[in-house]
Image (cartoon, rainbow, N blue to C red; front, side, top):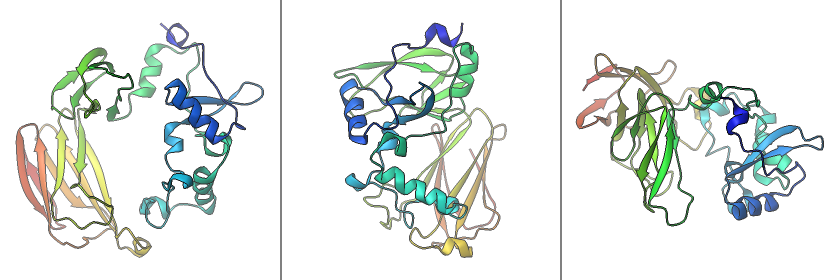
Length: 279
């Protein structure tokens, strides 16, 4: 079976000159999350989605480089990239805000080839858009997945049915993932004393780099940043924490963490020295 056998042929498109307001109206009225952007010759030049509308100046959600941008990315950013962020948040036409790096499939691609393009993400969010729905049919990509809310394990490569309500968005995490979860904050600069929770979804080895800086200055360029390298050894059931190369501990110098895997919970303290947590 190939893409042409399952693809939607009656596709809604817009052109780069379409206004951002018209795009937002179209997505709302048609209850869709995005549309392809085509030029006058009907060639695909990008895709415009709800995500492209999230950071907008008129709603006060534009990216603020000094405070919101990931500092380690900003260190490598160019003036051209900064200008692009500004245009995306202030642009008035679809061509100014659309995502240009589109992953596409041709009609002759096999279903397997398309699934491989879709399966590289470790977290799968599947929002419910049907009013009054009490269940959601979900296709799980190949591999093992864990329900984020219940911890239930599912084998992929098939459809499943999940009960839903207004408070719960179906969310699944691939087996072999490390999921750090910070304490709840009411605003980004709020100081909290709650520990960092690290959830392990077993099934394969995994790694994760947790980045932190002061959140308000460019001191990360002077080495004032902290990276916690996390490595999960699935056969030994051991999570190793260590400082990333070139980084250092930031206050507080002793960090309380809670490591979870299913019903197993292990509290630990990370102070910058290599730490093994066995589950």
